[in-house]
Length: 92
Image 1 (cartoon, rainbow, N blue to C red):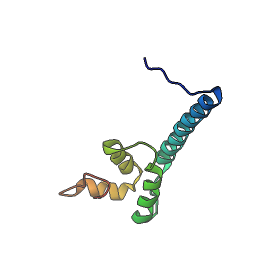
Image 2 (cartoon, rainbow, N blue to C red):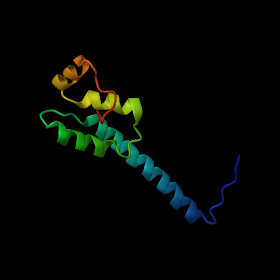
Image 3 (tube, rainbow, N blue to C red):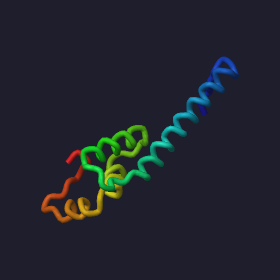
Image 4 (cartoon, one colour):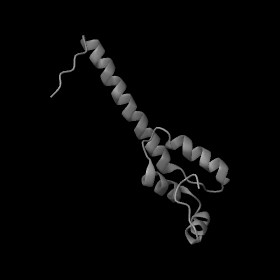
């Protein structure tokens, strides 16, 4: 186990607070990502909102794609799934 030195209790508490703030921010981003739904928004506006929420959530790869599919309009999701060559990334 490594030894970490902070020099003072104040520095330790500052670092501890920073770490918890990062975790709190990440949890807020995840919650926002899970609440997003396209509804009647145009896809372009929806994608912008989704990307803002995804930034800082640590979601990536397959889990991010699945969250995107979940949040998009059901009609669009069905059309994408029925496509001959369905997209395999959010960019597509």
